[in-house]
Image 1 (spheres, rainbow, N blue to C red):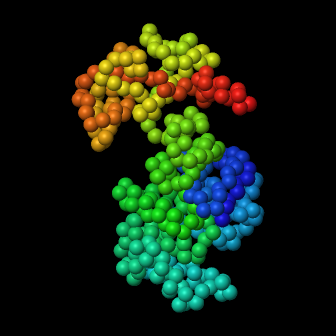
Image 2: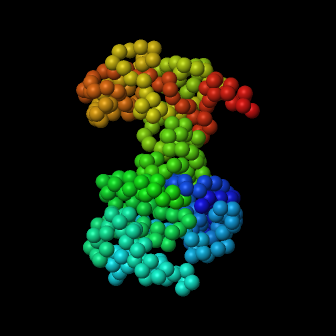
Length: 365
């Protein structure tokens, strides 16, 4: 079941929460709405579900406008962060609940309900807990029950609001893998809200990064990491080093220090320079690619690579986080050399393009 979100706006009083949001979600795709608190992601999810009404715009399921339909008419499954299980019901009865309250004409027989719930219990690996009550379950088990209950009515779309946010790290990892496997098996359309970058990129087919009621980027997980569309996405998605200085000619200046960028931007003036830890060139010997001296102040071996925190020696005030390949781990106090030629430059929110990027843009115009 495909979802079309067309020019959705939402305000609460004078506060604009969503600003002209448009997004197409193909049938069977799993999409993460990712962003900090206040970005509008949960409001958008609730509008898709019919639990909130947009101020303007349309929601279409497989081409049919459902904007005016009540939540129960949209055939959407919704899973909340805090489970919302019925405490007085067993696991079996919680999962069966949605089926038992269907209109009489749509309600399965008692035998069919039992068969369906038994299948779901097997699917979520909780058959041995069918007669337990929610108070007797762990957080991860409760969330599996909530997911099974949502799937029991065979929703056309499954929506999840921070589904693993209340769980500890190890349980979150296990449930993420389980949800991904379940999606591969059943091929339902799924939209989930999260503020966790790792969760979004590990589980989703596509990540929609939101900020202040706007979509900053909607893309495959690896492209969001490696080709951020905006400065917000670059800074929000994982660790990034930021240096403040000035571009003059083809060089980056910080105080009395300067070094070549490897190209000459059309813009000249104050900039912020950004580099992911793995984009920093690093070597034990000085070279044209790694001319800048640093000293190791922290070293964290990660197996086939080491994450380092290094202090620039005389050319910048703040430490940098870098990644060094190989099993030969540098020691604290060791002198290394880094290069910043792979940096992205921004003047405020405006990306400063390289000559090659400017030429490519001109040719595509």
